[in-house]
Length: 327
Image (cartoon, rainbow, N blue to C red; front, top):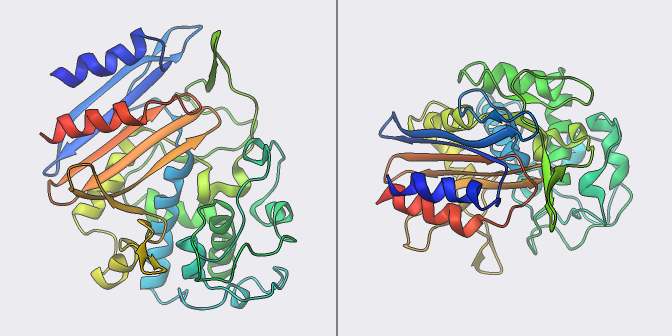
C-alpha cells in the first residue's frame, strides 16, 4: 500500500516521532498501523490499539456527543442562556446561548500569549478565572471565532445540570457505551499505562514537550486516547448509534454567519475536502499532540490519525494520505 511508505517517510525524515492510524470502511477495520516511537529514548513502538496520545481539540467531538445525549434527553436547551445553567459567570454586555458557545459565535476570546500551555491544577470551575472577566469579542451571533474556552463553559453547564463531574458524565454516556476504554481525561501526576511521551520539535530535533495541565479545558482539548478509540466514535456516528437524527443534524450542520458558512457545527468541523467530498470531524493541535479525525459519510469511512508531537506541520501530507485511502 502506497500510503504505508508515505507515512513511514514522515518517521524516516524526522517529521514526527510517532504516529498511529486507524481507518474504518463500511463498518469494518480497513487499515491500522503504528509508526515510529511512543518513547524515542526507550524506543517503544507505537501501537494504534494501545498507545495513548494527547488528542487536543478532537476532545470537542467527544464533549459534543455527551452534549447531544443531554439535549436528546431534554436536560439542556441549546438555545437557553448560559446564565440559566451557570448563573455565577460574570454578566457581559450581551447574553449568549449554549448553541453559540458550541459553534464559536458567542464572542468568547481565545488564548492570549502562552495560555495554551497553562500548567495550573485548575478544576473546570476554577479555570473560568482565565477568561471570565474579559469582554466578548463581538455581539453573539454576529461573527465566528474559534476557541476552547467556550467548550469549558459548556462542560461546566453540563456538570451543573447532571449533578456529577463532567468527566463522569462523559464516561457514563459516551465512553463506556462505545467501548472507548482507552479514552481518559489527562490528570497531572497520574501515569497511564501505554501513554506516549509528548514531544515538541525545533531545529535541533525533538525534545520533551513542556509540562501542561489541560484538565480545566477537558471538553475543548484535555482528553487522551488511542487512534482505535477515536475511530470507534466516528463509527458510532455512521451507525446512527448516538441519538435521534433531529438532534445530530444540528450538531453536524455548519453555522452560517454573514451569509457565509463557518464550516463548523456544534463541536464538529463540517466541511468538504479538495475534491468536494463532504466530511465532519476535527483537527487537534496542542502541546505534545496533533490529531486528525474525519468521518466521510458517503464513503462510510472513518480516519483517526494521532501524533505525539506539537504541530509537526504535516496537515497537507495527512490529507493526501486520507485522499489516497479513499481512492
